[in-house]
Length: 158
Image (cartoon, rainbow, N blue to C red; front, side, top):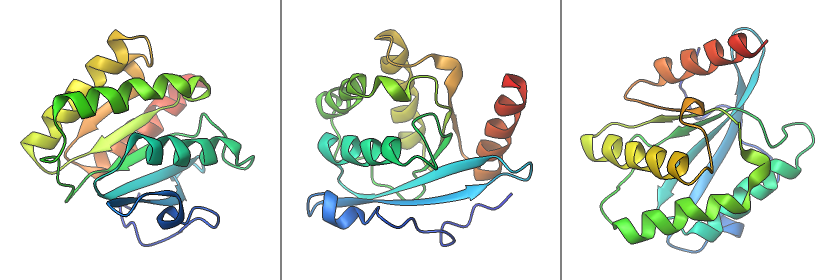
């Protein structure tokens, strides 16, 4: 399993068109060793909730991918410092507007304690508000672990 993000940029997902100047969301896709597809998001800069929702909407509309496509969020190198609790909560609760994504597996890769803590809080908010089940969310410091988790969860669903 590869964690190289430079591989398969997705046509139609030029996030610089869809996201304000303060940030962008690079989107690519890949396959797990068993052939299952997943989408990789790599946020760069400050992301607004509108930017994230627009990208998820585009993902859901792509028939070859679909709303339930497993997702790897690669937050390595991401600066969590500009996000206060109110901004994070507002962005997370906005995901309630994407009910078609409920049940999609989401793995988050971080490289800092701040990132790990922010994503764990995100898991609690999403679960606590019934937006997503805790078992569909995984946070780790290792991209390989994230991909293995997605693969194992997909096998368990078969």
